[in-house]
Amino acid sequence: MKKAFAVALCAAMVVGLLAGCGSSKSGDTTNEGSTKAASGKTWVIATDTVFKPFEYTNEENEFVGIDVDILAAVAKDQGFKYELQSLGWDAAVAAVQAGQADAIIAGATIKQERIDSGWIFSDGYYNATQTFVVSKGSDIKSFADLKGKNVAVKNGTAGADYANELKDEYGFTVTTFEDSPTMYQDVILGNSVACVEDTPIMAASIKEGDLALEIPDGMANDGAPYGFAIMDKNNQELIDMFNAGLKNIQDDGTYDEIINKYLGE
Image (tube, rainbow, N blue to C red; front, side, top):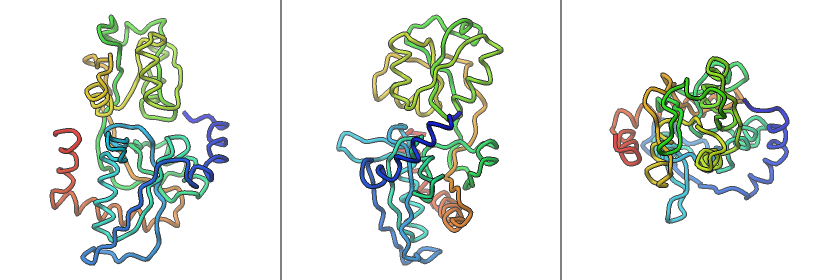
């Protein structure tokens, strides 16, 4: 879970990040055929920096991914303008909490704890499981094998929640990291015997990054949907447009094209 001081620090830094320390992508996506006319407002949307294949920088130095393409397609359908700010997970959350960004799209799992703390989610746009991941050739084959060992997690994620739910039952400890690549390296270097990550992200990262990691059978949870989110009820218009646009791109096949592009499903 997020530590209070980490969020406070990110909130203090976020103005500078929004001013240009992170990657950004602007979307001037007014569309005469959209179901909702653009108001002229440019919405600021915060996201993570590396959460492949949902948001990442490709070999052409373009910021791409499932979240990036879904947002672009929805905005085009609904005729609104946006600026996508790549800040990192903690800073993206803090930006929305501080009112420096209007919404977040970053593979954010819809869960009650977040709703209770003020997150207002869209309809789910992708269902993902979380899984334990081990080094290639590891002896870790089940939860029982984790006893007395350490597991790496990413701060404030559903994967961290999953590990923390199991640690007492299976007798392992947890170390928290701020980003996925550092978490992966902790396992590769042998400091932790496993990490916990969203399954599609892990599968893509192993394949494309040729990481010395593997996903054991039987160590994933049942999963939950990702959602687009705001934290200010005055921005409900944006959630309504996202939901309407999401339904439209699902109905016309655009959504499936985006998923196939990155996951081949």
